[in-house]
Image (cartoon, rainbow, N blue to C red; front, side, top):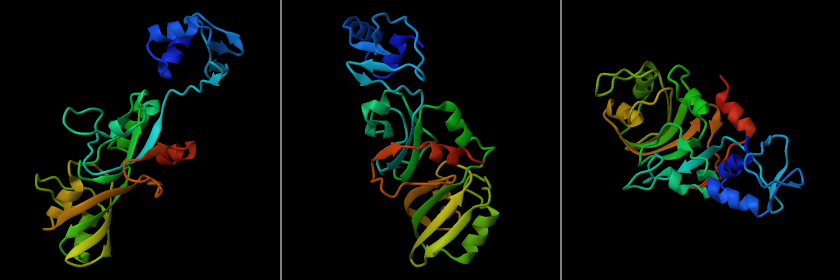
Amino acid sequence: MRMDKLLANMGFGTRKDVKKLMKSGGVHVNGEIVKEGKVHVDPDQDLVTVFGEEVKYKSHIYLMMNKPQGVISATEDSEHETVIDLILYEHAMYEPFPVGRLDKDTEGFLLITNDGQFSHALMSPKRHVPKTYVATVRGKVIEEDVEMFKRGVTLDDGYETKPAQLIILKQGEISEIELTITEGKYHQVKRMFEAVDKKVLTLKRTKIGNLTLDPELELGTYRELTAKEIELLLAK
């Protein structure tokens, strides 16, 4: 990789900015000053420093966010705050995007990355990656609902959902439930409960595939995934 491209990708400014930086003599490769942007380096083998600070190159980032309500799952929007607005520059410079979406009024586990293949692997309908939600629901959720969800319910547009696992956590006028689905139709969880004459009041995604949302992540915060967590997400 060209030296100027590496530094630009790592947030040291435009190619013009990087050129000035290199001319200043502050860039070293394996201890030697490099002033020409066309010099090629191997980010995995060569030690690159800028004014003595090591530049750790990576091409992709993988973030776990606990999305709050009121924020939309998009890269940019003229009217609303987006999940990318919550990310620090050191991660935003990779131009990441949300993997799938959570509704504006839904909170919880959202993956953010700049790896298109990773996103496709998780979002592909062929993989049927399960997603788990907890919700409060207006109306008494009963065992008949559990059985109906297990068979699949018919939504308002005639679509019949794939089998889903519904667990009743608390039963009453306001019920608390956990629901695991393997698809992601528009407003699916809300529409599934509407199909049984109930209304979702609050909704939070807690799990994607085999990975559970970090309980230490407060709403609106995020962290990078570990290599083991990435492997867990991609496991079949």
